[in-house]
Each structure stands twice: as structure tokens, then as C-alpha cells.
Amino acid sequence: MIVAVFLLMSSVLLSACSGLSHADDNRIQIVFWHSMAGPPLEALNKIVNDFNQSQDEIYVKPEYQGSYEESLAKFRRVGGTANAPNIYQAQDIGSKYMMESGDIVPVQKLMDEEHYNMNQLEKNIRNYYTVNGKLYSMPFNSSTPVVLYNADAFNKAGLDPNKPPETYSQFREAAKKLTQANKGMKGFSFLNYPWFFEELLAVQGGEYINQNNGRTGLATKATFNSQKGLNIFKWLREMQKDGTLANYGTSGDNESSGFLTQKVGMFMSSSASMAEMFKNAPFKVGVAYIPRPDNIERQGVVIGGASLWLSKGKSAKEEKAAFAFMKYMASPKAQADWHIHTGYFPINPGAYKEPIIIKNYKKTPQFKVAVNQFHDTKSTYATRGPMMTLMPQSRVIMSRAIDDLYQGKNLQQSLDTAADHVNEAIAQMNLANKK
Image 1 (cartoon, one colour):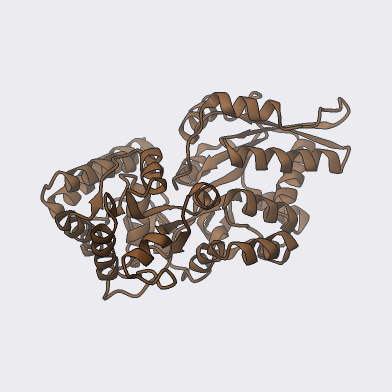
Image 2 (image 1 turned 90 degrees about the vertical axis):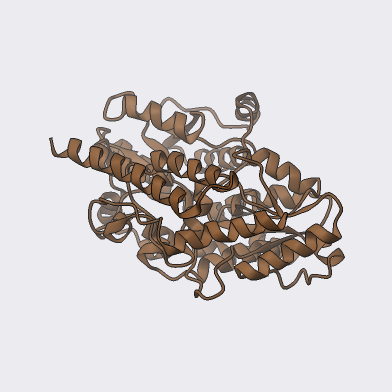
């Protein structure tokens, strides 16, 4: 998922100015490590503050730990010790590591003890963090990819902004028209961020690794170099040859700037970026489902973002207090506020009945497109997403393959090389785990 990265200084200032209530020494203290910055940090601090003021038994102390990668490195050093936080926010692709770390308590344990009704949580979100029937973490900031487009540029190009493209061929034709009709604009851009490749694979029903995407057994082989993976690369290569594809490398900030300054007509982004784009664009922004090949039925999208994990080794009293906060964050009202101010999906469908969402959807119906795409998703191993400890390393490898695509190298060979490197890493990890 791509969310704009803000300077650490701004995060510190936001924390200082957030109005967070101060701890009462008699309360149970819950330390909450997170990686939210910018507008999501403001929204998070409001939820924490509201919780702290709603009762007098628990005090939650949120602590920003840098990016997801920086935060995970810190948690690895302290996990299982007295210095570990009570609650830790881990990125989706860090889930397999967290499950195997031995440093967490599955939230399923607390849910069972308190007879918590899991059906109040979105099934498609729950599915990502569930393995062998056990929910390991509480979903929180959940997003999917969408296509954002310049609706004004669509009109200028003779395209209907109310009927955005859906298939590869339709996107290709729309990109041509946008490029031709709008001076200085490329029709489409594709960021070198492998999450988008994973999503374009899943929408076709393609799995990233074997063993049902690592969901029913330990993955031993990458499968993303299949025909479905090649479909993605061929489509991008065709637009590259058309002269309609912009290349911003790995810089999401530059790509977003290119869209806002009308140098790009369409691009894939995280649904979590919608609120900021609607606010800052000097034109009307449209939202569309991510593209699929013409001859393949749409399967849906994989949830992205992060979830909340309970640290092992804390007292039963602290465990229950931490879970009480998680339940509060999952409540309809808290999720409605979170959704409107960040663009992340509500993990609780009851949030859609909250007045703030109903009012906002009337004002900005584009929000509903991302929600509809998510709800249209079929529950399969492909759309539940790959579950593998090496996903972060795999994305580094896949990024090189996307670079090869832009450099004009053989498409199948680039995918096969990436798969070979992932396979080598998997083999080494599996061998080490047997020792």
C-alpha cells in the first residue's frame, strides 16, 4: 500500500499537539507502538485520546516507532522481553514473521475468553490474518489498491469520467487518448512498488507462492512467474511502447506530485491516499477498480495495511486491558472516524451506518468505489494474499524485475530470474528452520 511519507519531525510535532490526555498513575498503562504519520497520526491520536477519556481504568500511550520496517527491526530486538510494547502495529507482510516469532499472543485467545463476536469484523479483512482457523491479530488500518484518475482530463480526451476503464485493453486505449488530448500528460504511471504487482496477480486469481499462497503449508516455490504474472508485464510493456506510460521509479511522492500537477492522467494508489488526493487536487479525482486482463474474470483484491498484535509475557491484567483498547478501536464509531479522516477501510461493517460516513459519501461518493471493489472480492487463496516470512525480501527481488521491464529486458526471463532468487531464499530459510 502506498501512503505519503512524512518527515519524522512533523510526526513528533503532531504528537505533541494532539491533545493526548495524561496518564493517571492508578491506571493500567498500555504501551502502543505504531508507524502512523501525517493525517493518520492525527486520526489515531484522536481515537486514543477518546478512549483514555472514556474510562478511568486504562491509559494507552501511543509511541511512534518510524516506518513499518524500522518498527519491525525494533520489535525483533525487544520481542518477548519486558521492554516489548503491549500492542504492536505490524505491516501485513510482516504477519508470518509475527506468527512464528513466539513473541505474541494470538488475539483469538482473548476473543474466545471474552466470547467476542468476530462476525462484526469484515470477513475479507479477517481472512488475511487468519491461518488454520485462528485469528492472530486484530485488523486495523486496512487498505487496497485503486486507480485514481483525472476526471477533467477524461472529459477533455472524450472519455466518460463516469465509466472508467476496467480491462487492460480499455486502460491502454484510455491512456492513449489522455496522452494525445492533454499536453504534457502521460496517460498512466505504474510505480515500482511490488505490492501493485501482487494485487494485479490476485485480481486474476493468480497465487504468488505455492501451497495455496502459503496458506495451507510452508511455501517452497514462487509461482508469480506464471502466465498471469506475464500478463501484467506484457500489458505494461505495450503501454511503454505506446509512449503513454510514465516511470517514476520507486518514488510514490514524485508520482503523486505528477498526478496533482497533471503530468499523469491515471495511476494505481492505495485507497488510504484518497482523502489527501480529494483535498489537494485542483481537479475532480475519479476512483476506479484496478485493471484486469480482458479474458479473465475479476477475482478481487488483497487487503493491505497493518494489524495490531498482543505481546507475549505481559500480565493477564495488561492483556485484557490491551484487548479492551483493541475492541474500542474496532467499534463502529471509531472505525467511521478513522475511515473518513484517512481513507482506510472500516474493519467493522457497522461503521457504514454511522452518520459521519453517510454524510461524507453523499459529499464524496468516490469513497464508495474502493469499498465496493473490496466487497466485490471473492474469498480465495489468491485474494487472501501470500503468507510467507520472506515477503519483504521478495519485494526487493521483484522490484529488480520491474526495473528490468522498464529497461526493455525480456519479460519472461525477468520474472523467471526473480522467481529463482526467491526460490533460493525460501530453500535457505526452510533448511535453517529444520536445524
